[in-house]
Image 1 (cartoon, rainbow, N blue to C red):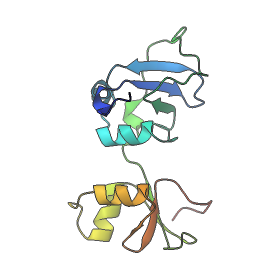
Image 2 (image 1 turned 90 degrees about the vertical axis):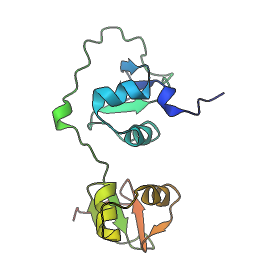
Image 3 (image 1 turned 60 degrees about the horizontal axis):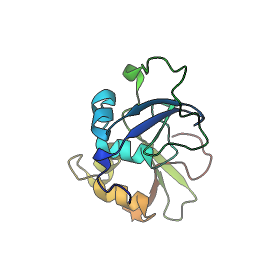
Image 4 (image 1 turned 45 degrees about the horizontal axis):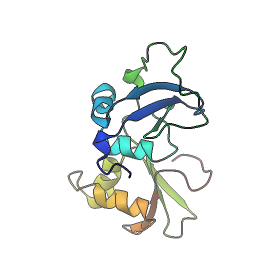
Length: 150
């Protein structure tokens, strides 16, 4: 039976190729304290193929085909000062064919489209998750196609 409360789940940190386990944190909270990431960012990283710090893959589950032995793994000391604290949001035309803008974070996108940064970002996250329009824009955490940054 899967764990419903994600804070009670372990967070496994792999190299970017997903071939070697580098560290296991016993709970999401322990990883939050270590990484200074929010719980929602950790959940998003663990449930997607996005990399944390552009260098590490996070997972709630052990990857069976990876080396999970932790043998020959030294101290895990990522450079947290260069971390990317926000996940970018890409905005496209309603049909998804024209790139409009890349926002540096959910909060920046909400601030511009709602007029205030104090709006809840959950609505935007749900629109992205279910591929629904947000203020007439198709929004995504990943680029829909190759395009030059704006």
